[in-house]
Amino acid sequence: MSTPKTIKEYLAQLRTALAGADPAMIQDALYDAEEHLRSELAEHPGMGEAELLEKIATSYGAPEEVAEIYRTTEQTVVRALRTPPPRPRRSAFGRFFGVAADPHTWGALFYMLLALATGIFYFTWAVTGLSLSLGLAFTLVGIPFFLVFMASVRGLSLLESRIVEGMLGVRMPRRPPYVERERPWHQRILAMLADPRTWVTLLYMLLMLPLGIAYFTVVVVLTCVSLALIATPAMKAWTVAYHLETGSCIDAPYWVCSLAEWSTTWAGVAVWCALGILLLFATLHLVRALGHLHGAIAKHLLVKSARV
Image (cartoon, rainbow, N blue to C red; front, side, top):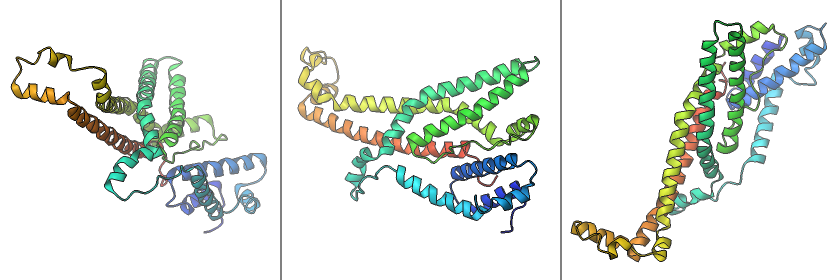
């Protein structure tokens, strides 16, 4: 590659050198590089961008060198933070019950439960902000309020990224898209409003309410049903089928009474308990799959495209 003459060329070459890497890592690398270069330029006001890039080429590195450093660092950090993988299981029996040994399963479970609260908060914040922005549009505080609200949306995007990465194990940005502090304030505002990621993040916040309700309902209902079935032996040991013994089934069809009587025997209770265990582990598989799905949704909507 040719030697970059401007910071924009340097960042373009760095993006090209990082082609194929994780988009979240590319966003972080571009943020770090631009922040460093802009800071150096601010400390040397009499120096042009071409002269500055030539001066710090040996200290900070060429785009190819910086890209290689980020790739190496990313691999090192991933290996250091990665939870020990569960022991591989070859049999279908082992793979089915081994889901409980996967830390991502429990992270996804907690995220599904938390999603209801975060979904309500995000949805309320987005709807309230948009409604007040529209209602105040013709007042003096309308435009400032709208701009502050949109800035808060970008901040909440970074917060949600940390939650997703921590619980679902999906690599998300650790830094926001860089904003040039030297640019006039109106240009920074226009850049924020022209960034599609700002509006896509707002869409994500609105979607989190129905998604959070669905996740919470699925997890709570299936888990409660599973635990209730698993607890049937304890319930059997604690009490007797009172209604059957008092003849409450006398007017019901014969097959209903037979099934009800069998279900309260120790054999029937054991079957219900086994079904409860199977349902519980099937729920964990479903939760892990939903965690992967939501991680992909968050990655697509909250991470700036590597091609931009």
